[in-house]
Length: 293
Length: 296
Image (cartoon, rainbow over all chains, first blue to last red; front, side, top):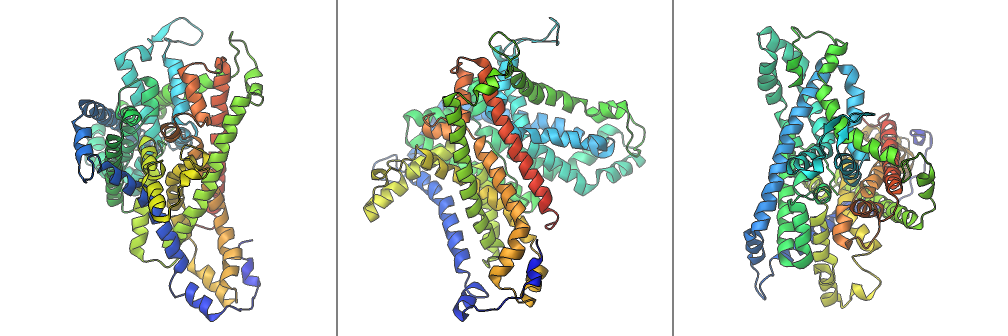
């Protein structure tokens, strides 16, 4: 099916003008698509920026930005989201790095099942995840078929809810973090590194901290930045678990303000850009995609 | 953490056995607690009536309850429109920067921008589109002032099917660019040269060589885009405030308060969504597997 063209000689009857336009000449259509794409990218950002600078009548200024940043609720919710992101990143590194390492080294037969699990978050959207989490953890968790209580309801305590949202964020970031780390380990050949370190007398802790982690730091950084980008603007888990993070704050601000949300929207865009830009830099153009839509 | 718990003296060839599995216990425990258990809860719940007895009624009701059918149909249409539209546009863009003859610098620019845009979603994206195409939006005003054409005099509204689709496109076509650019790179120069030497026209080369090779990749990516839009919630909610009752928004309403007056039916609705997402991801990975026969 794919190579049939080779058996089909064809007359070449194209006008000279068409050849010049499509061949070595000016790639008219390519430019057209590119310019359309660029417009689609840039117009909403330009519109947001333009709008955010017009808080004061007839002048262009940063008043919306200073007003938005001066709001103590902004500082609180944004700080909270950043804190959640940091905790999420740390816990998911603790969870993913040893697992990926162990599978490469000792348990290749677990690879398929673990990869399958890390892809599940693509199948289970955030709204479904939070639905299930709320239904499970809003009542006490008992040992199956008994009345032995394993866990108090998580959603009724502050610590429990925070633990739940971090767990949810780890799940949302899992596909990116795992894949990033696993690819990183493949490229540096952790097995050989581990054998070398062991033959020099290193113990497991030393190998982990001084051999494995430094060698996958690029992968960790790109996984961490993607997780950061997902967590900081996230709305679904936060609003259904009732936590005052930046996402719900921005949403509420949009209900009764005009200029400040635009300013924060543009700021969010710059943050996303920074995160993705750093990933591009450290991974050499292997862009990744996330999805907290 | 885990590996240090098992004090293996030396690295051996894959050592099976229970001790090796101990190393992945934390990961599996986490996955069971926060991924499997919540899904199983919804799954089991969808087979229970309000008294907790086993029933198929909830699943059957998915196909008869008008509000649920409408929600699914709306979600499917939006996802399909933005997957096909975003897929075609994304493909053309990827084509233009890979083999379309544009300068190399534009390629890395587009890829970087696509990475950002495919991650720029949710509330900020909705706000950006309000500032662009809302009633007082930038483009709305521009069209009015320059061309004396008011888009809101037509049937257009940003807070409608068309508006939400245009907004979704912002993260849809960049995703297509990111997937298609490497696939287009995989088209071998030799294939084109072989075709040309045998007298094939440019059109024939595309129709009979390039597109058949790329087709599984294009279709697979569009299916992925479909799932990408199907699971979206925050963008739609922030833009329309729930006025456009897509499935995710209906499920949200069901979580906040049992709007269907049937807990099990809510679970069944969630499961239906997981089913559609699973089918689309499965289709994507199957087609991706077929792609790899030619494009590596």
